[in-house]
Image 1: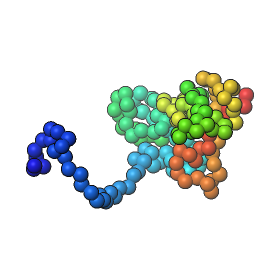
Image 2: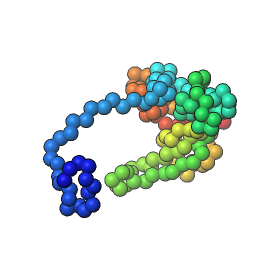
Image 3: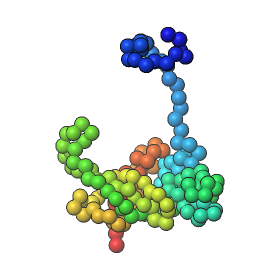
Image 4: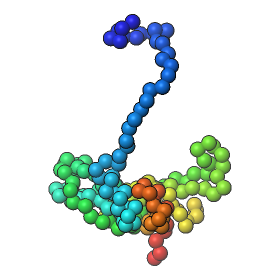
Length: 159
């Protein structure tokens, strides 16, 4: 069978043993690189603003999803937001019970379009609610590596 012939039955396939070397470099992309650098270096959350729609995207994008304009204006959006939705996990990925439940939330960053899915901390499961006002808690500078996990969690804001 030649490579151009179509396989129509499983019996026509043959296994190929060995290793296929794969080399790649994953990047966060143009917008992601700057976004994570600001989190790592400055403990700040940045977004990009559309000049036509006036939307501020968090996480930042390089083009507007509504009008396709290029997004070049970067601005700090602050570290506060609101719980848009959440879930509480009582088991780990293997199905084993967790000692303490984990709370994951979609946090809409104040004044921005979009948001971040992240852990909530310093709050009990029974205290979590939609529209809970929260703020980011960052790792110490020496511990940051340039990932979303440089934000330890979001905690409820003091009134």
